[in-house]
Image: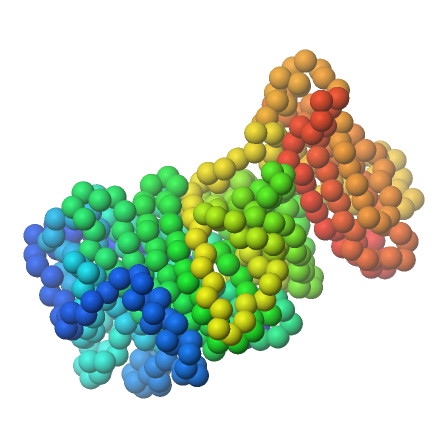
Length: 537
């Protein structure tokens, strides 16, 4: 419940703060802002670089953890949702307004769920200056705060970024704990990333590290990349992060981090991706909504160190489900939204078919560990119930310095794709033979593959077979046939669980012919319903 409350508040607020998509500056407002001068107030300059930030993090980890911030002023702590939404950042206070560079930055006010202050800095010529909060930076509208006396030391909740070439939509936002989001060319926010995950799905309370300070580096003239830094802190670890953001399709974030544990961490998650899956073509347990599918992403993709490609469709399980995919030096992983057909969602408000995929690519070997997937039951789309990350085999311990580098790609597709065929749909339903009375219960699976050499093999009427493995029950009515509409093949089969057994059944499938494997590997976990609920209809 602690995790669910946090995610409902933090991630849900990101989705509602004008972010999916966010309209930041009208054309007249943008023109006025660009013609004007910044009204920001800065603190004194201090030398700054990534090495000094790592020194800060190391020194911080050498001291007992101290919670950041304190109680909010009563006027902020008591804000309703609508009141917080009414607070708008003044456009003439955007960082780098009126300057000859490509980016703008605006800041989020504290209040509602965002109670921990984040100090903001501008970095230029090797010097960092704190950006001072003052109430004049915000238009409080109908928030009721217009006459409130807020302390000058209040600080900010986070920030968002947009290019001056496209002032109407922000391309990234950092808000809440260590959460951040970004978009590709479709401009639609969806899943989020985090700086670090601690003890996620471990059975004990999850820890949410905070970025307590950000440093935004003034871009060089005509640069298409924005660099920023973050100082991370939590009871278990302190860390320094460097982000290099390059908008486009996909948007690329190059990340370097240095982590300094205060204690042994049982489960540390690198490159954590956080998403939502309520219902879809393969899991209709919560399908009471009028929309056919509701999810930010529909599968976990893995490119293992050995070169194998794996696709694991997501589900909304009745109980928390944990998977660990052991590997050495993974080439990449991510939560993807492969299904990009509006007709499959019918949502003209949040556009699930445009939600970005997020791909994590290590820049160097990460050694032994596992990609871990946590699926948490959810009753609706306001809960981010899916988490995936890399967890190193060796537990981090106090005194370590852990250095990692990786890239995040945000866009309509992963930047790395298999040369073989991929799974594009996984459907489930009641099994049996149409027109014949059922005398036992089974679950039907229909798995579609396309790409690779399948189009040529389909035309040539080649012999394509399913390599299908099952850990329990038995298989019936297995078939593999061309699917000309997709220029691919469809594998269909029924899983018949043991009569009184509801134990999880693991499925593994790929396509093959005489030459070998033709597709990525499809993995699935099927939990049969109790025998009393197996209706034959």
